[in-house]
Image (cartoon, rainbow, N blue to C red; front, side, top):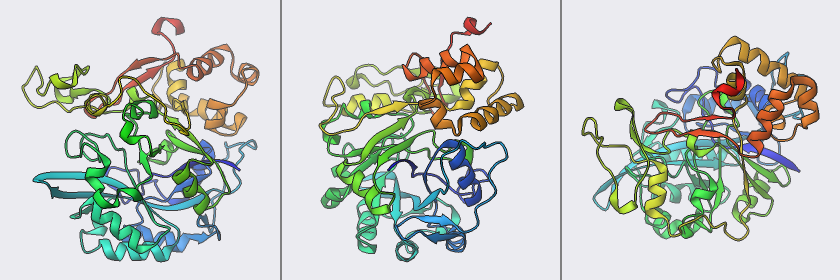
Length: 416
């Protein structure tokens, strides 16, 4: 069956996350967005793990159901296609350690098929960090040794490197990463089969590196609030089981590709210095501009520049068997642009609710709704907005050094 999976989210136990990140909200917002399988996030946190064991029940296929689903949002409408959201046991951890005389800071996603495996992993990791301190705990443990522990816990437990290009905390990032996957995981590299591209890169950027050709490129929301679910996600066509899903990620059979941010919208796309408002297009890789021209402090080297540094190809070359991908813009951003008010404003939220009630869920509206139906219910401006999104005719203002970029579908004077 065709389904959409978002396998990197957080709970309210992670720092800088919404208090609304609970299982009930994730369940409801997964339906609103059109997500069929959603990660639990944060299974290493003792209190969250206890909540997971109390509120979730195994579905017999490696996923979990919510014991007592909340009533659907009154404005969800009758057109939504999800009858029962499934949860996958997931977490993100931060490994901080020294290797080859350099401090490394790598974030990784862990996956498990059952609570017994999670308990085994948590017991092992508790010796290397305070699991109760954060939903995304800091571990004094190398990435390679973390992978070994996960493999020892179960042959159905997996590790996927998270947002691999992010400057500060990733496998290939400019600040504390490596120049290759093999350098990070060494002898256990064959057990890495997928990489999360992150919001500031897309598959095409990763296709610049022949060394990444063998990996399945996945995308997830890394949601810090339930409303952010599905801003990136994975498209699959397999049996709705844990083993079938990960089999697809390992072989690409049944993995249909990803839904992507335009990478310019990611907050680390270009080099820059947020404090001084400096944003820098990368020059030749061998002429990296290291310092802010205003204050002299170091620039944060962005994802595009880092890809240029490590690229083996001048242009993207899609690996044999690799699926394609689609760009999406979060629907509240499109409504906000059309209405000329903030994406969190009451007017935008009311229009968002109206669209979801009519079309069923956000991802269906963005990807599949017909022009005729959009014209009928919303008018020609929305028809043109969705046409431009689907044809990638957008205006891109890149993000840098923690500042999100913006993607627009209209020139400012077109909506006057």
